[in-house]
Image: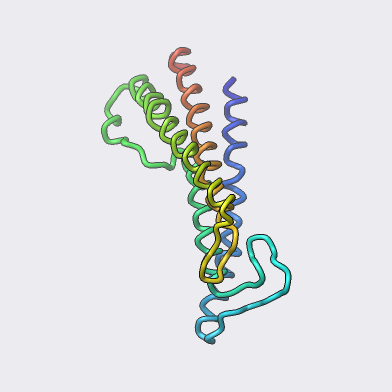
Length: 183
């Protein structure tokens, strides 16, 4: 069971690992935006047909929109990886002097009572938020990226994955509580 749960947690972290690679295009887009601003250039490339996300060209506003899209994806999906590796914010000062089983019970409580429901609520409402952006064709009004639903759709996906990770880890800890200390 533990092996399966660990594999599931690793699988839920895949989008975070992929999002980490977005740092390279993020750096490139910042460099191009700074250079374009210094040169007084706005339009980088134009074409006739509308392309998904890009519209009919790439402008400085497109680069700025791209930067916050990438940063949002890195933060949203990176939160799952931080949780998986126990690098998230936790109230350790209160639990530091408690016995291991009590600390474990507090972690189960935090995961199953606070984290999972909070993430489920965000995912539920985030889904309708993304759906509105999709159906209305929401995009930049300043010549930036045209499909805001993509990044808005990342929110319910990321929080849904975080809720699943919390559920899996919470159940793993419940099993550990039931099993008792291992020698």
